[in-house]
Image 1 (tube, rainbow, N blue to C red):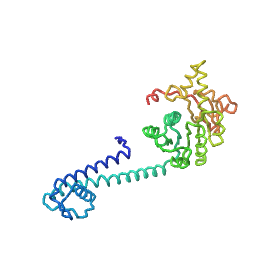
Image 2: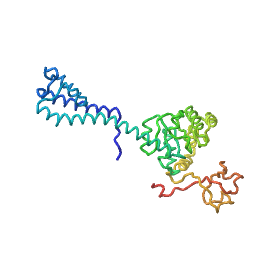
Image 3: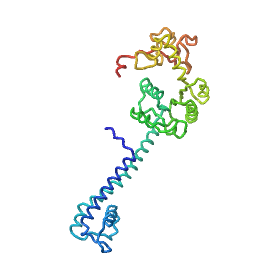
Image 4: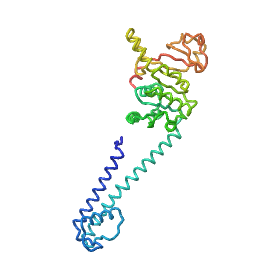
Length: 333
């Protein structure tokens, strides 16, 4: 069952109200039976004396200068004041214990996760680009949600990511301590999807310093900043504004082409661009003669177009970039 989300301040305020109600109830009970109590001064109990007695009694201080002397007052202390004292302590001490326990449990969970997590993906920024990147990771790579770490300064965005089962870290990706909490030094890939190009450059630079072997993919708005991302350590850079602009321009004259591009980029649709290893039976053959529609061949980390002379014959270890047809069963999933 999901736990209701209550802010810490509201939880503490509610407990204080409960404690005050218990205190007021004790004061009224003592003051109503004030004749059954004896004051060290011998002048009887006033309302202030009742507050004093209730306070020191519920807090288990008990100075002894105000004491119940009649049987009725002592009976009320046993049956009423003592339960109120226990309730008062539970409210105050319970608040402290709950905070300490929750912090300890959270720290233990974080430490346990950080000690075990390896080869995960860190996504910096969970805006429109970040959400789309995570969606593609979960659908295309069949990645478990708890192996995706989202870093953002927007708590609402983190709440959305947490609802999807993703691990969240509050902070900016430009800070090395925040990225260390996200375990970027052990990540296999880092997706930089910030809203500003300068933040993307600094985040990429910080991530590359902490994770020299991680595959870093960054998004920028302006093409003139691509070289800055490359120099900062990005393996691949996607120019979001130019890509959107090309699609807009194509949509004015060839809208069907745009529909096809959207189909290829959307894994939930009928076609999708995918990558796979070659079959043993395909070695030595031409990628243009395969049953799959091959777009390119990846050899030693370099992508060659299918019509490139370097890949006329498929070699062992090559990977194919091809158009995959999404089956109806996958669409239902």
